[in-house]
Image (cartoon, rainbow, N blue to C red; front, side, top):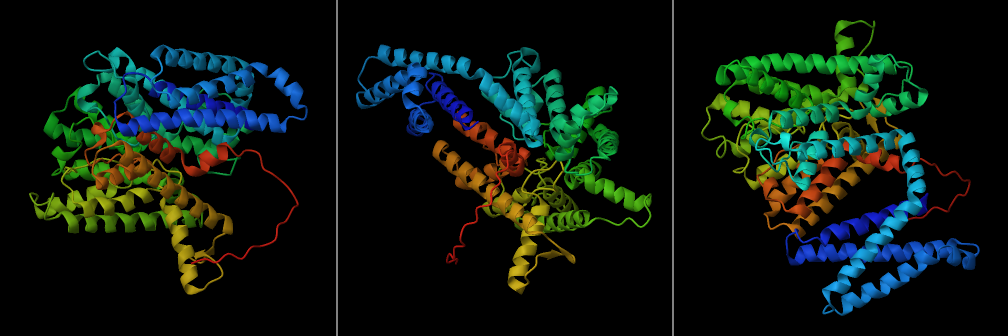
Length: 563
């Protein structure tokens, strides 16, 4: 299994190096350094693969005979590669020949390893986390190809590959960052494709696919129930079908009611037409799924004085960020269908933290911007705008005031809220309010000297605390690497780069106005951040760790100085 993954990794590096060598990419010292790094990394891992295989082989002579072609090629290519780097004045024909030879080797290895790769993919897909990972990738690829077709764009030219990939990833990962104006560039069919991608990404591919199976009266296997249970974070396999139906009905009901209210709000300004109805449906789905895509070039800035539009979109965002489990728990508690049922500890945490973050964000935004971007608004409109922007920081991505004029302090404050995000199991991104609650409880236990971590008189397990810290560390690492990557490849202000990076990882979609200015490496970095933020660190790690190692070996404890 490890051998297959190394081969896939080598092939990926070679492919990136090949793309980087194509003539249509921008010139520049930083870009050449990145392209060279991929070339060197590919050669290094190729040599590492050969050395590891040879070392692990029991009969090394038989291994060399059986893999003679691979051994000869790796040695030959390494020698030629070093020669080309040491003697840059060699003819271009020689470089082209080496490039072609490398491509032929990749084809050979692909044919040789196709069965092994298929086995690897099958093993990954059988794991719940792996299924989610692969399904998201498949939908993104499909969306990318559809957005490249001529009928998807208003002028019939189609979108180029990198921008199409960026847009599809942003839609499926319900982020909302755009490199082309959605309102102007795409045709009706292009907008419809984006809307479908948002709905699929917001609900989750597993939920959509298994609901289709339920509609067709097909029974779900135990493996399918296990995958779905992982997708919706519910360990009750027996009630999984009931939970699935509740999620679907709840989603379509909320989105339908939201669309009707928005149609009334938008119609007063745009007229009650079929186009306005489509706009209402689009923004209702985009808001509930916390996507942030808008069919207006300036997002919702033209409706800053419309309480009906602003409050409806805010409510849709809040509901989408609470998670289906919390909404269902609230509903059953209010209706009293189950006698004595109270809000779960998870629901209480989500509700309290959501209220605190919204109120705090509102007053911080108002305090820092009431003499800046809010200056031209009336007092009531200022509070409404501050409230709306605080809500959209829950990974929604709409804006009712221009973000290009925000102060650096406001941008940095907003980064904290975007990094935190919504609730676990919701359509929102970020590291989640549940994670922040656990981290806060643990830090409180350290200050009070308590040997146990508790929340509202409930004790948390060590596993919960470790997972929370793992997610927090993963998020900080992803944001740090994203910022470094963008700083090295873009000539843009640091504060806006930080804001863009956190917005991408938190799948927020708010931008300080630099998204369209990103070059190809910058767009690739943002794509990777959006995908990581939507899938989540636990899903990504779990998809590649489906085999648990067992053993009885115990190692001595180490005493390391901390602080």
